[in-house]
Length: 107
Figure (cartoon, rainbow, N blue to C red):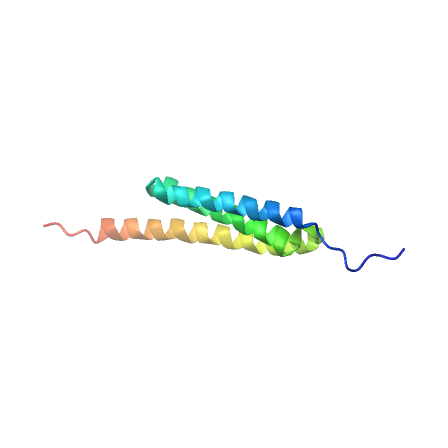
């Protein structure tokens, strides 16, 4: 039961991944070219950024071939940080609205 230690992935797989990264980057640049504004712009930019980061992490950092434990070790803290960022943004908006309402100058 000997395993081949020098296993290599085919070059075509890496070329396909580079192609997909090029396509995703093209769509990301098209968001700026089309001059989209507001929440749609930032949602699309973040969406393409997360997809590209996931592809790079999966293929080029070889996480795709790792065990489930290592994948969860990477995904769970990242998700927790995202949840905390959303909660902080909600609290920040709440605090700002209260300050604007309470300290409003009448003039």
